[in-house]
Image (tube, rainbow over all chains, first blue to last red; front, side, top):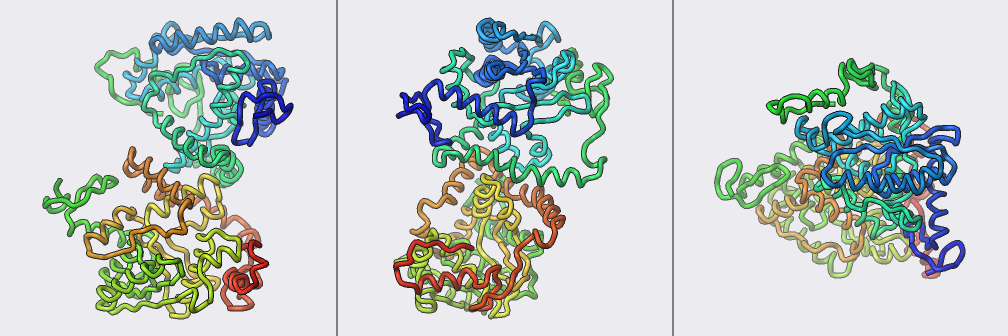
Length: 320
Length: 320
């Protein structure tokens, strides 16, 4: 098959766009999709300083590389999660990317390590709090990304969530009609209440395009899924959406984009019609670390308290 | 396994309710679910005269039988669709049901036949209008049920849509975020604008429960799917929801009930906030038949005009 743009030999088909691309024009296609997500959703400009949450996987490394290629000022933050074998491997992919791509482009990698900086790993956090590992991990990452962005004076935290990720999260929230979660599922969460802005510039690229981008661009990434995520319902939702996409190319993008286009305005209208009291709990500083929270002590500090406690309390769950 | 109620030998498990039932208590379970749908959604009372849309399939025959057993006044309406072989078979199931169940309970069967009453069948309607067969069939049925209900002075038209049907329709509408369709997907559509009330008393029973109800109650029904529905996306959505239900019993009911509980109030609030003009097009009588329509001539009369036209116009589509 031939490239849609130059008629040269194609290396990939993107069925959703009914298009084939050679390597060069596939890279341009990906850059254009990221640029379009950034401008459609007014995510940030070249005046903003971005902090990219990098895991060593395809999405975050592709995102960081694309942002640098497009001329944005973007540093990275890697969090060592202490997941046996996996985290060390992930760090290696990030380090090689920094040496090859980020440093030459003038970008910096920040690092946080759960074990050496806070004395726990994801497995311990899950066990001490009674949370699922993905929940304990997500809580830790959100807190540390927010803190690092504010401490470093960054304008926004950029994450590598791709179309498949966003569609799967939406699918899970929709199957249960968790309208509170749906309300917050946006390509941009504005800064405010002590939280930095959060942006998802990869939402117009599928998982497969993100992986192909890395291959074509010579970015070596952690291919394995996190060993702690096995059995995660997120993965099942992705499989169902892939079945749908297989028989109706474009269905996944239509599901996610249709939500943004048709439902979010209705949810927004309802939110603004609610009284301030009903909209959201009051946010104030955490009594321990000063991070914004709707509690006296934030979830992260409660997690730290739990992991520091003796094992007799294991299994009690914490909320929030 | 043993019946949840009497500890007798169970004939069916209902995983969603984590329950096994013997024949007698399964019948009671089904009756209770229908009663609960009727009361939860204020569908009708024993003072109302109901017209049940009967096809000869499990859902409509089970519905008619249950309504009669529960003491409601319910006649039936069968529409001969002229689908080769299938429609004649379906009529046979309905006739045997009427003889065995409906007539002894004092209920009457009304009949309409597309070919002898209106000079067309579903296949011709699809060909003349460029609609898919299911669309041409649905249009015809909706018009004829409405007309028969109003002509006969019935208070409501009851259809056999079960939980699987409603969940699959909702799933299709949700995948495209067709909020206008979602707004109208209700267990009850109130009468008004010249339309009769429409009710769906089977929404708390799955397809499997409906079939089992017929088997246990000795109701013989048309098992085959309509031959014209093959490849229908509705069937694919049912398969996907069945996959989900398989791994998470209750997920299908949670999807449908969660929609009614969490999203419909938000859609309703938005509808009432809109101006009258924006809410819906003006409804007036059809210039030919007097049925309510947002056009000069209703979709059914336009369908009749099309099927009466020479074949040269075949393939032009009609809207609405």
